[in-house]
Image (cartoon, rainbow, N blue to C red; front, top):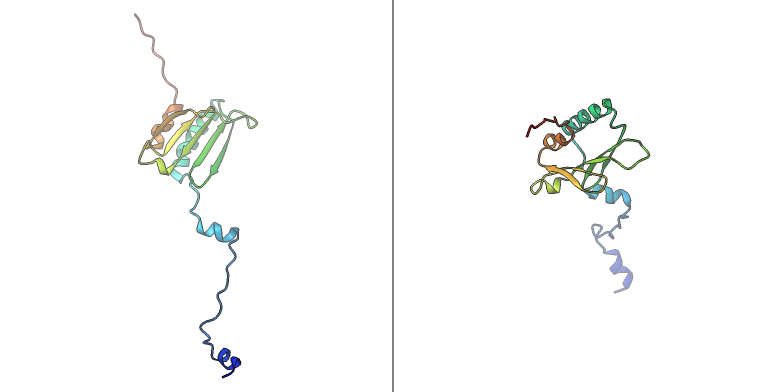
Length: 132
């Protein structure tokens, strides 16, 4: 027996394995999609935003989508820090609630399970005079 005869009897199905590059494109396909606001949520947020713009309080906004949070930031001027951030964190949906309004200092002003209830923080409160 010669060594050459043994290599010729190799099965065609036992081809060598091909290595697949693990570049950024492959990693993007494997990771979970970014969190973002759906159409109804954006309608509610933009309704409040439009009202505040008409009142002259807000002037600009920015939106961001990340793997664990969606953010709608509101600005008085584009060059400043955001006045408020409206955040959606689906991982907190069963705990404190997925939606929150955050102040520039990081203080959570309101948190809840329903976006419309959380956005009520931006409604003007009526003042009543109390006689003592």
